[in-house]
Image (cartoon, rainbow, N blue to C red):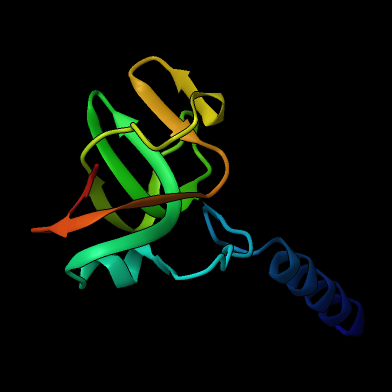
Length: 119
């Protein structure tokens, strides 16, 4: 019985260390006056938003997190992004009809009806 409890306790520690989050997360950059995607979703006016870009078949989103699938998908909060004009082409990766950034980017534009419109 005691061995079973020790094995179960060890297994619980291993599982806890593995975690269950399917999203890639890292420390969000806090450059200047940038806001998160969650904050942008409830904001209007001109903003600089930090997030991951995911474009699937021409529908571009700025995402709070990047799901660990291949190709990646949006994880967490997301807003529509009018275009990729502010994203450095070297930061973009493409597989099939999905284009994304592996790292956070900062996009500046105007929030209009839930879409970040870049200029």
